Image (cartoon, rainbow, N blue to C red; front, side):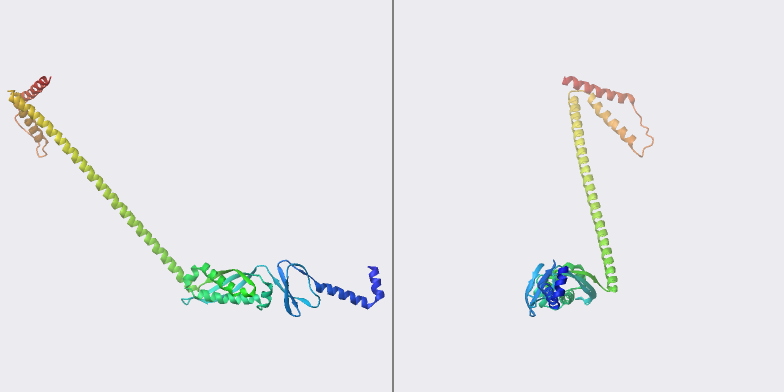
Length: 313
C-alpha cells in the first residue's frame, strides 16, 4: 500500500487519472444482474440484447443499461369504480390482477408505464363485462366475470410482453336501497319456500292418512268376507247334521219305533221354550209344563240313540 502511494506521489496526476479511468471503465463493463430481473442493453440508444441474472459484461461507452425489468409475478391493485349494469343499476366494482413479464424488451419498448396501461385496460374491460349483465347475473356469476376479464386483458396485453395470470373481482357493492330490496326479496323467497314445504307436508300426510284408511277398510272387508264364509260353512255343517238326524229319525219311524216322534216333539218344545225365554219383551212366562211328558220325550231320544248305536255295532 505504501509502495502504491509512493508510486502515485512520484508519478503525479497522470497516474491518478489513469487509475480513476480504469476503475470507471471496469464499473461500466462489468454488471451483476440480480435474480428475478432482466436488464435491456442499448447501443447508441438502440436495443440490442437482454441481460439474464448473473455476472454480465458490456462494451464500455458504446453499451449501456436501458431498463431494469422485474420478471417476477406482480400484484396490480385495480381502483374501485362505479359500473352501470344492463338493467341500469349502479354498482361499485373493486378488482385485483396478477401479471408477469415474459419479455423484458417488449415490456420496456412496446408500452410506456406498463402498470398504468394494465390498470386502465382492466378498468375499461370491467365496465364492459359487468355492463353486459343484469344485477342478479353479475352478483351470482363472479367466476364467469373473472374468466371473461382474464381472457380479454391477457389477449390485449400480449403484445406488451406480459402474461396476465389471474383477474379477480374483490367486491361488487350495490347501492343501499338495492341491498334492502334484495334482503326483502330473499326473505319473501324463503317464506314462500317454507309455505310450499308445509303445504307439501300436509298433502303427503293427507295422502298417507287416506291410504291408511283405505287399507283399513280393505282389511275390514276381508275380515267380514272371511267371517261370512265361516258362518256359511257352519250353517252348511249344521244343515248336514240336521238332515242326517232327520234321516235317522225317519228310518226309525219307518221301522215302527214310536220314540222318534217323541224326539221331534221334544226338540221343537225345547226350542220354543228357549225362544220365549230369550225374548227381550218377555219378563215373566207362565206355561203349563208337563214334566213327565218332557222326561218321556228325552227318554225316547236316548232310546233312539241306543238303538242306532246297537245297529251300527
